[in-house]
Amino acid sequence: MAKQSFYYADPLPLSTTKVKAGEQLFGCSALKIKTKHLRLLSNGCRARAAWNADVKPLEIPRQWYNLIADLSVKPPPPLHPKTFEPIKPEDLSPLFPDALIKQEASNDRFIDIPDEVLDIYGLWRPTPLIRAKRLEKLLDTPARIYYKYEGVSPAGSHKPNTAVPQVYYNAQQGIKKIVTETGAGQWGSSLAFACSLFGLDCEVWQVRASFDQKPYRRLMMETWGAKVHPSPSSITETGRKILQMDPYSPGSLGIAISEAVEVAAMNADTKYCLGSVLNHVLLHQTVIGEECLKQMEAFGETPDFIIGCAGGGSNLAGLSFPFIREKLSGKINPVIRAVEPAACPSLTKGVYTYDYGDTAGMTPLMKMHTLGHNFIPDPIHAGGLRYHGMAPLLSHVYELGHMEAISIPQTECFQGAIQFARSEGLIPAPEPTHAIAATIREALRCRETREAKVILMAMCGHGHFDLTAYEKYLQGNMVDLSFEEENIKESLAKIPQVIASSQNN
Image: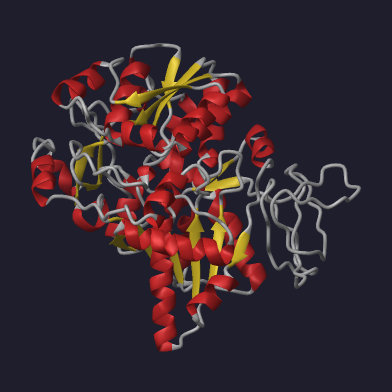
């Protein structure tokens, strides 16, 4: 095996340790080095990064970046679900702790990360930036492909980046219990993990389709102490109404959100946490892009394309927002491409308007790309992308022309995932297979044009608990699911029209 330099980091945020040379690492390999706090960068998975001895070691970012501060046109405000007036901080207090409400409305460019959060981030951050040389060879492309791999976190995805600070701020305010929704289970497991560290109770409503498809995600949440319900459930009024209309409903993130919000609003010692969509969630995820900027610089590379899957938008925003900052300053000019499932294409087929964030209409109205809050996507395997809307800030950035979007059917995504797994060795979660498929498309275009473009891809999680989806693909039983135009028209017709005057805000 050819030797390749790699990078070690002290998990404690105040210091770093670097090893100049060593072999490529896989699995649970470890080096016997007499350093008190030295730990494998990838927390038990492989870590590769060409790190020059003259380059300063990478540290965990100490601040989150808020893109709103650098936008000349600010995003429209969320509206109260009853009055349709701009939301006030006190309107959000039944659901969120004060610190998160402040972050949600902040225009500050940078927000300090608490030391307690940094300490926990150190369990897996910094995460590796890896060049996909074997995939490049397989595709016979001159393109240079890099992926930022977030699957090294304890929960196996990027979601702990926001789960940890959200639970921390709730714990600081004396909250005893957290409720949430989850699709594929990556967010639910991340929140369960964070609650276990801070001693809070955790209750999760998991979309029924994913609850059935991914039993090990449920077991993962329960291992960390969470209580998990399939959604729609008979526990809440929202769930009972849905089940009365359709006893076999596959559920949706919108329905699961409604159930969790209903419980939080009725209990004073309980707050709600959301794994995507909201500004403070996207803010927390920018640790990904801040690290990646420095890693790309260490490689001596500037991305021509930044590609990520998009359901609610936190993964793509986390990687791309720091790069958009550099783009707005004129330093770089990458094409930023959101990739969504063909069965739930909110950016490419939805409308940009105010809509509820949940099915029951309990959340604030947010101006976003939406398929309508009543839209229930077909049960594709990328459960984390089955959301009717896109993050308002990401939608705003898209409207300003700072990124583009495409949709890809799931069979093409899994074809790309197999190519990736058989060349790079990592089995991706169904969600980032969309980014992989789009990256392969671009790499093949480079093969035709002979352009050596640099492609940066968001690999937001591993697929170790999604193997039933791979089984269906490998056995030839996976089919492409798409939306029905009539269903979207029917769903869009139920968006509140009384706020038409707010559309120009």
